[in-house]
Length: 188
Image (tube, rainbow, N blue to C red; front, top):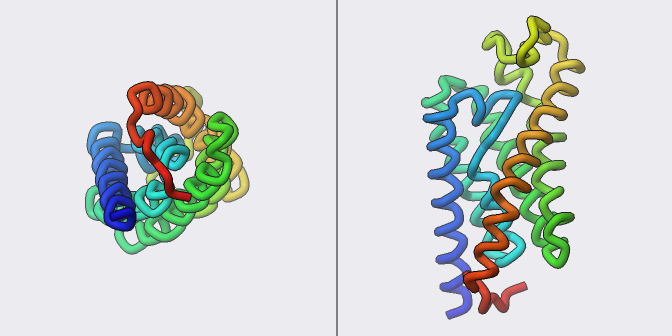
């Protein structure tokens, strides 16, 4: 029964993450997959504080969403960079969150750090020619300059992740705890 519950939770978390990511891609477009990201789905990373099933759930949800996003974003084969490395960042962030679950504010740093360090490393390749690397509210273009593009991506993605995780995720976690959702969790 425990294994069935674990798999069911992981599946539900994967579905929620994937759907929220795809809705963000469809309605916020560049804010879901560009150098400035506000993926609402990242708020669900807090579920790793409550259940170990969130680690595979978030990972699979990210993998599925990034695969489906390839034709939506038009990234073609280069989109596989996001499928592999974006999923890796989500997996590492979920592991961190689970490991530090006793200290939720520290736990939420995992997805922020993993996404901020990994995703900007491949985004300049994935987004070359899209003109995304113009610093918002300025005319400063970073297109073609990998190091400045990476550094801009680190800062922008870290800020976007922090806003989503601490602004949406932490209240979500507090609400789930208040209403006893996953309160009977006895997994490692």
